Image (cartoon, rainbow, N blue to C red; front, side):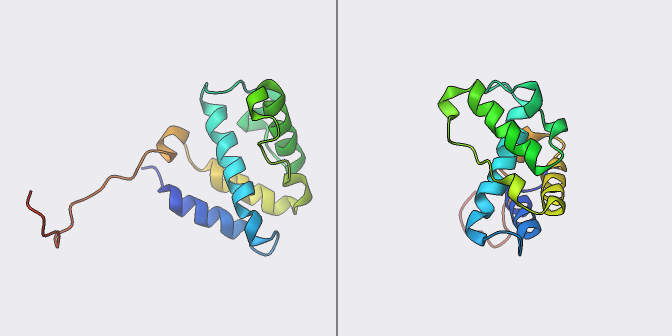
Length: 123
């Protein structure tokens, strides 16, 4: 079963705690989520050096972001290239957290809603 996106985002932010300013969490986490998503789909051109399997450290992640921006001019300047300046162990933990999602498309699917027993609305 796919994890709820909120849970993954909180755990990923936790991996960065103490390593970068809290205001930068979103750039790191959402940047990696973007890479995970585009590596699995065909929405953007993804050069070989930007394939998810190759993202093993901050320098490679930064290079992947740059390669995607070069291959997709509409993304020029939009992706973060900030991973190389963070503790390599933190980056590995962050990548591992995002990598745990076996199906990126499932990651973005809304969670199923269940009818609560205290729901007073008529069915």
